[in-house]
Image (cartoon, rainbow, N blue to C red; front, side):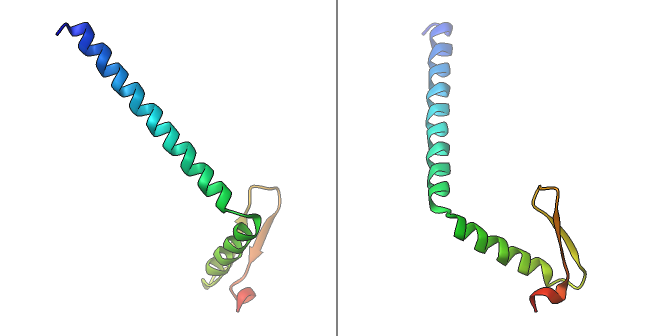
Length: 77
């Protein structure tokens, strides 16, 4: 078999693999985003902040907005 044909077939195989992989990633992201409602996201955020606040020292938690939340460990007790 000529080298060019082997190279071409390998390129096709890699291209098909990338297409399948991209479709799988797209489908996974779609399933996750459809399953996460704003309420679930809010509950997870509150649970996370609660767990972080259990440490003995205070924490500054930023949500990428200009403001932040200063949490003390006594806040969730």
